[in-house]
Structures are given as structure tokens and as C-alpha cells.
Image 1 (tube, rainbow, N blue to C red):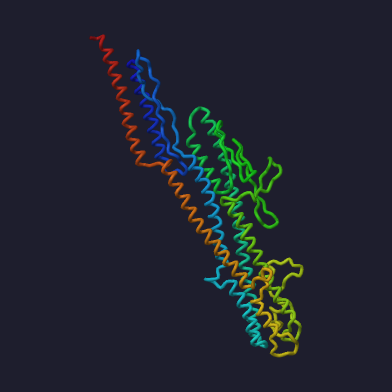
Image 2: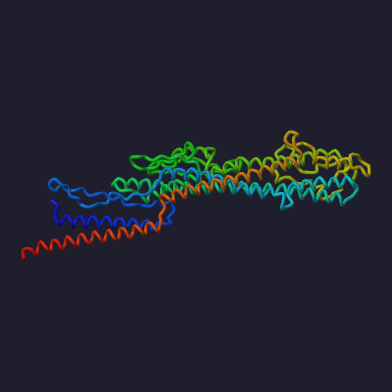
Amino acid sequence: MAKIHGLLDMGRRGMQVSQSALQTTSHNIANKSTEGYSRQRVDVLSNPAVDEGKYRIGTGSMTGAINRTNNPWIEKQIEKEGSNFAYLDGRSGALSRLESAFNEQTVKGLNNSMTDFFNGFRELANNPESLTSRTVVKDNANAMVKNFQDMDRQIDAVKTDLNKTIESGIGEVNGFTKEISTLNEKIQQVEMTGASANDERDRRDLLVKKLSEKLDISYAEDNVSGMLNITAGKTGILVAGTSSTALKTSTNENNQTQILYELSQGGTRVDITDQFKRGALGGAIDLRDGMVTDLKTQLEELSYNIANEVNKAHAEGFDRYNKEGVQFFNIPADGNFSLDQLKINKAINDDVGKIAAGSKPNAPGDNATANVIHSLQFKPVMGEGQFTFDSFYNAKVGEIGIMAQRANSGLESQKNIVDQLKNMREATSGVSLDEEAAKMIEFQKSFEASARIIRMADEMFDTVLNLKRL
């Protein structure tokens, strides 16, 4: 039957429940700015009642559990859309750098240098005996070569940055996976006791989001142990229970950073670079192996064709000394061409009189070769005879501009999606200081009320004990 000491127990349990609720509310307030934190609430259950004849008398409340307020669907959406945002963000930054390298509006770019080079031969055709015109041709040729090589270096710099992004990103990924495996173990230990590992799960969810921002991952939670298993790409198992596997990087013969997965400790390493299509690393790999590599190849193709066409025309002419023209540009005969080796023939650099303007010896005023060379500017020799030098280059500049514009537009749109999802998460799991302050007052009053029950029960005991004295 219900007794006075039952009231003491009821008050004690009520104070414990209120104290737990106050402590949880204080924990929420302290973690208001903690990234990835989910608001926690105490689940209060009714204590089992006792029989009193044909009645059942309530015995107060007890703490059932302390759970986090969390929507797994929103968390999954944030992880997915955050990965897409990181992919677009990485591409947008690199494309902006490429766009700056090919800027033809605010600086004297490569297109202007090519025009000046061919215009130099046009001026030489007007005055084929002039040493001044020949000097202008040489200076314009050197300027064009320098512009080609500067642009090539800028493309290489973008490629190097992308390689470093991949390498540093893999280092961060390995740090995330190691911590996730440690959290798996902690979560298992905590939840084996029947408690909820709320803070550990919040931290693990945050790390999964950060991991997905770096590369493609798929993951699944073991319903029994609560452990999370994570796979990178299609084959790289990063986390399996309490163990994690670190990804490795290496540089191939094309100076490209590769991502390697080690099948066993100290065993075979498999290249899984092409498995990543999302995240910051996916964006860096896609741009490096796609646009950046293509641009470097096409720039070399453009410079080689200019040098080769000019060389063929120049070799058929005669210089100021009535000698057959030499090669205007030094390019390897075996076809192993690279832009850093492109330069003007030393003989021409030392003596501009060796620039060929005419097509016959001993023919003062002959300008046939100079006319042929300056007309190469409008000769369709690029893209299997579909483009001139100018149109080929301008097409590439336009392509970069369009891709950069699309990337920026896509990035802005994706940012709005991510922000909207984060706002939805904040509405569900975020901490409101006003709400927590109101809860604190509520639990404080509840604690005081439970204390009054104990005081009342104590007074009732005194009354019973004093009956004997009466």
C-alpha cells in the first residue's frame, strides 16, 4: 500500500528527473555553436504504479532516456548535396584561374601576340629591305613565344594546385576515417549499456558529411552494433567497424597524383582515381584529367602548327644575304615537341638579316615569302582544316568562359540548396536559446515542487512520530 516513504521516493525521483533535464538543457546551451550538434531531450516515463486494493496508485516519474532530436533523412540529403556543392566549388575555383590565364580583355593576351607576329611579316612585306621591320618581326616572335610559355606555365600551375588539392584531401580523408572508426568503438561501448551515445553519433554524422565533401562514399550502419561501415568509390573499404584503411597517393609518369587503395597491409595497391566523380577531389580529378590536360595539349598543338607552318614557308625563301632561309623556330624533328623548348632560331636572334622576305635570290624588293607567312594567320590548318589559328584559339577562350560561367551559376544554385537543407536541420535539431531558457525555468520549478513533496512527507513523518507523545 502507499506509504509516507513512498512520497519521499516520489519526490526524490522527481528531483532526479528535473536535475537530469536541467543538466541536459545546460548541455544544449553550451553546445549552441558546436558544428553538427543535435538538440537533446530527456524522455520522462511514468514510474510503475502500486496496487492499493482495487486501485493503482501512481509513484511518480523516472528518466527513460536522453535522446537527440535528429532527422536522418535531412542528414542524408545534406551529405549528398554537400558533396555536389564541394564538387562544383572545386571546379569553379580552378576554372576561374584558367579563365584569368586566357584573359584577352584586360591584358595583352596570346591572341594579340599572334596578331602582332603576323602583322610584323605584313609590315616586312611592305618594306622587305628594312632592318627595322625585321627587328620588329624578331621582337614580336619572341613576345609570342613568351606568351605561349607563360600560358603553359599557368596551366601547369593550375594542374599542380589540383594535384596538391588531391594529395592534401586524401590526408584529411584518412584523418576522418580514423576518427570515425574510433567513434564506432565508443558508440558500441556506450550503447551496450543501454544508454544513447548522442554526442558521439553527432560527431560521427558530421565527419561523414565532411568525408562526402571530399570524395564519393557509400555507407551503412549495423543495426545491432551501431557501427558505420564506409566504402570510397566502388571498391575502397575505408571503415569496417573499429578498423580503418588509409588511402595512399602517388605520382604517375604524366605528373598526375593518383589515389591508391591498399588491398592488404603492405600488399597490392590498386589505382581507384577514376572511381571518384563527386566531392572536392572528384571535381579536381575531373578538371585536371579533362579540361586542364586538353588545354595544355591544344596549346602545344597550336604553337607547334604555327612554328611548323612558318618554318616551311620561311625555308623556301631567301634572306637579306641572298641565302636560303633557315628554320625560323627551333622545333625537334622527331615530333617530341613541348612548349618550354620552343624558341626562335639563334641565327635569326643574332642577325635579323637572316629573316627571309623574298622567294628568289638577288631580287631587291621581293616580298613573296613575307606575304606567304603573314597570310598563314588566315589559313585553316587547325582541327583538320576547320579552323585558323585565331578561330581555334578564340574557340578555346570562349569554351573556358562558358564553362566558368556555368560552374559559377551551378555553384550558386547548389549553395542555395545546401543552405535550405541546413536551415531545415537547424529547425529540427538546432538549439534555440529562448526555448532552452524557458525549459530551464520549467525544470527549475519542477525541481522545487519535488523538493516540496519531500518536505511535506517529512512533516507528515513528524506528525506521525508526535502522535505517541500526545
